[in-house]
Image (cartoon, rainbow, N blue to C red):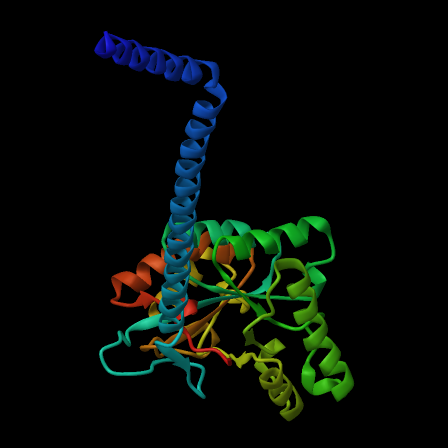
Length: 292
């Protein structure tokens, strides 16, 4: 009897405990919520670590790209005679540099498209009086976005030797300001109109962080070569017999002067292809060392 009483008491206690558990579902739910919260915090922590790792990886890739770009920019220099010279042995010296002056005129974008199709780089030397309208501004933006370097060719194309220093300063610096306003970058190269510098313009160009650039030959501004076929032959061979140049000016590192002109636009593809067939590579201007 006593044993039976003990068993009954134990059963009653068990039933009461079960009832208490059923009557307090809140506590059980709180325990489940606490577990879920802990798991969520762990996930957030892991996601934070992943994001940090991703940011660090992206930063490392950016740094590597910048270092690679710096390396690319230091393969050639511009010599005193305007030729493109390799900085060290092992770099191809059989190169020519394409430059287009008086841009962006009527043909600059078409010339840029031709060069892009041929995978040929160039420097477009611009004048400020070709940047007066929204359309001209847009043309400059497109040249820049296509990957072509933009050079300073003065605002109004005067002979620098004929104007005082303050005007030379205005011609050069105001154009660099205008170019920066449009594309967000200042020119890294300077070419004086007619290739005629002064001591002042040379010093100012260096102060402005621009490499002085003349040229080794060009023919499209001479009347006999205002014809696409004649111009192509002259540029490919380097010879201009009709302007007293019966010998070839083509050589490794030749700095080729051309202009934004209809006949030059028409001859451009043949010029690039002909020079390549002659064993010359068109150098990427981004490989030329500039003033830091």
